[in-house]
Amino acid sequence: MNLAVLARRFLPRRVLRWPVHAWSGASMGTRWSVKVCARHRPDAAVVGKAIEAELDRVDRQMSTWRADSDLSRYNTAAGPGWVELPDDCYRVVTTALAVARETDGAYDPTVGRLVNLWGFGPDGSREAPPAAVAIERARADCGWQRLRCDDARHAVWQPGGVFLDLSAIAKGFAVDQVCASLQRRGIHDYLVEVGGELRARGFRADGRPWYVAIESPEKDVGMPLVGLLRDGAIATSGDYLRFFESAGRRYSHTIDPRTAQPIGHALAAVTVLHDETMLADAYATAFSVLGSDDGLAFAQRHGIAARFVSRAAQGLATVESSAFARFRDA
Image 1 (cartoon, rainbow, N blue to C red):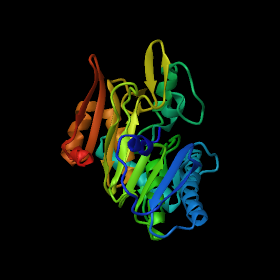
Image 2 (spheres, rainbow, N blue to C red):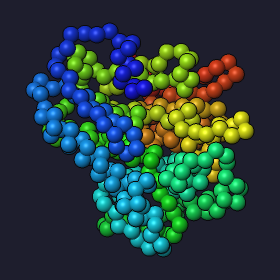
Image 3 (cartoon, rainbow, N blue to C red):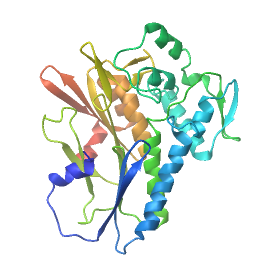
Image 4 (cartoon, rainbow, N blue to C red):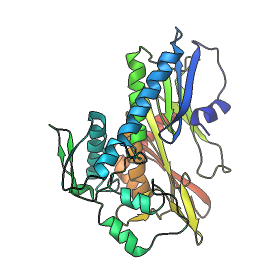
């Protein structure tokens, strides 16, 4: 369920300050929605087309599901050699590599072949784990350290066989681009969501900051956590979002680059607050790989607002970094 919709169920209504205008649709293999509050009614057709243009541009550059995308052009390049990329795609790749370096490879955008092999990419789904020899073969083509970037040409080195997957950062970047487009049109109060990644600025229609709700990994357990999203972004990664089960084990879509396997620890979900949705998105994936203890330690060292929900014998256990308190401040 849409996080903003969940929030509305648990919050009192107040007198509207300005009218609410909304757009929604499908792009990048998911649903998106935009809500704005504006004194003067925006041109719905113009704003809607501008939103779709931003999302389509990101999809056209960074999708692994499109054979004609710029990322697919990189992934199918024979190599070794340099592949020039459009400005936005290059920016996302270099940001992804920076997060990979910062997290010591817990987040690694080069795991595309493993993502596909485990049934979570464009090659199609599966119902059982792949053979060990196939895993090792795909693993040999991974490794963020193998890539180099040429800022002058906006080119990325393709050593041969590397398959980049930006699915854990591109949606967040798309949210940021939509927000920038709204800003350019003089719209400064909005809530933008693409596939569950959100960014807010300004105020809701009732003059209060935006509220969003974080679902529990076990939807029949407890109430959703409702908090404030003040001029920032929020992203959640969880093993309950995409997975398959085989022989009594759950195989999550999040691949641990260090083991070439889906994450196997007790962590069920991670939520990250950040100024940029792109980075909230990437850190949520990195923390999913690191697990609750190491992820929390990283978040504390770097002042990142993060919430970790793990499965335990008594149910769900939650820990939060000290910076996450600002989400609860009502």
